[in-house]
Image 1 (spheres, rainbow, N blue to C red):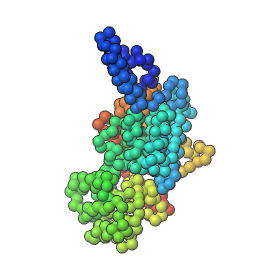
Image 2: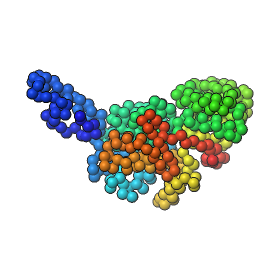
Image 3: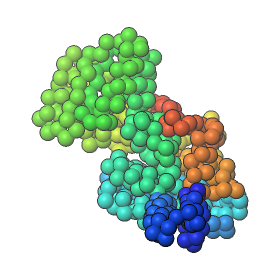
Image 4: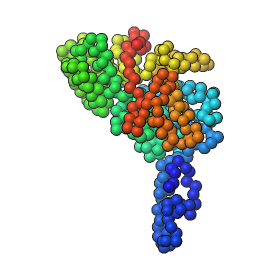
Length: 402
């Protein structure tokens, strides 16, 4: 059998032996036919694998993410956190004496650029991809990752399509939107707000969020005031009409399973017509909307608060940031990138003697990975990793408070 992780360096005679061809038992024509088939199989297998890192070389981790454009702030935070985490790893001997290098390319959220970036990174010999953000770009890259048997460890998205059905090479290090919206309802019940309206966009994101809400409402025996959907590209008139319908019975809380481009105009429309319930949005929408205008909005977060002093991982990040030449305030994107670096590093440590993609995939799902109090666990049938969700509120100065 040809081992996929091994570079294709066999002579034709070796290929015949490995594929079980008995040269004494076949005619010359059959030999040539089987030889051609063996070569094609070997080349096909090799083309699905880029060169694996060899001993003594740097370990390459790839990142294609929006570093510019509307999502650029989040992508830049992810990159900063990843670099900080790998710098600390390298300062302490790396992986078996080998340094980890992060290769970063900007895709600006464009699927075409993301595809080109991912192919170039795979051809460069990266061991894994990380830090992607924005579902159109992520969806464009996944076929390449699957074809190249390339682990994707850490994508900044709550999309359920990344989680169900489980993808062998995708490891989600944050909770999904279904977990987020379910946690929103549980939080509302805890604080005594049970008159709830839900507005979701009619796409995969919205439907998954709606499922999470409905599951928790049913479990708590709470009847919603409204469960409404709107087109993901609604006109201003359609959007206003949807808000009026959601606010008709003056709910105590309005849960929005919407992306950022829809959530902001919905919030503005609700306030404009005097509908002022407690509004809840998902982490992805909140990451792009945080600011004074959103004061009072509750945002679900899928990572611990960056200023929390009770979680070792967060305390460690704060200490490293304060010691850096250009100190920065810890943010959710920066913390997320730092988490990615810590969890990838642990997977690499488990593969020191066999540092190939196949081993890294097995290592990530072998047992619980604990990164200073932030724990993830995978299995071949479960790629969610974490279901951590907590609620924060946007303050008047535009920050998140727990």
